[in-house]
Image (cartoon, rainbow, N blue to C red; front, side, top):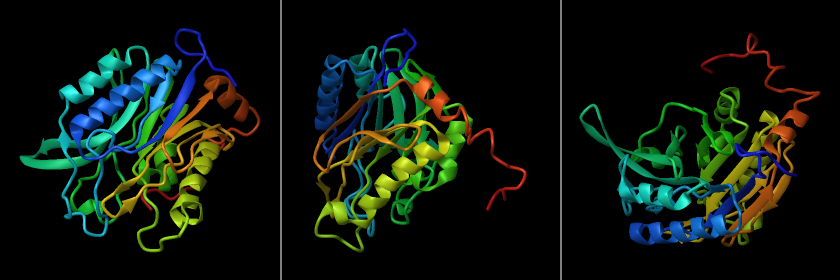
Length: 288
């Protein structure tokens, strides 16, 4: 599969499975190295995990253990450094954002999309597992935006559990959806082997289902390794608009890479059965 970018060349997509911890300086260093490698390999879109800069929580059952990860603010040098290094490459990465709202300091799980031109788009995680909500605030919107690789939307891990999240981005014109995760194995029903873990199966199921039901290209990144009592799954992948997995990693670090003609493949998937056009919103319950 090939695609057309703004410049008419092929678009190569890379989804990362990698471990990023709470050492912010080390996270920046590692991010710049991955960005440099992706550029050298001819990638046009690189999707890094949630918590790329600063890591993630250490315990979802008791998130006060270790507290929230190191937080960044809008316009910070760490994200600016990634943008400068990206050049023509479009990069999505996750971090914890600190912002003052109504006189109160709040922390959000956040994602940013950058290139050498600066910030292209942002997202704050809307859906939160119970433990996370004790220390982090929730975002309140889903918005697609234009990039050099086409119109794109971003979600953060648990957001993809809810079909309405990716559907909102697809209705806003996103043809590629990047889902950045720090998605761990089950903390209540641990399996001896990750492939047998319930959360491992759900992670893969959601990736293919969200791509197929919205007929979009889905790019799924994830953390690997261990943070506190959380064991992350990896399983980064690129999924076509029919739900077919085009490339994937295992539980260890690596890049899932595929070259995709986004417009051609999305148009082909929607030629006979166009899910967005054939919806019946007049019959759907709103606010349920």
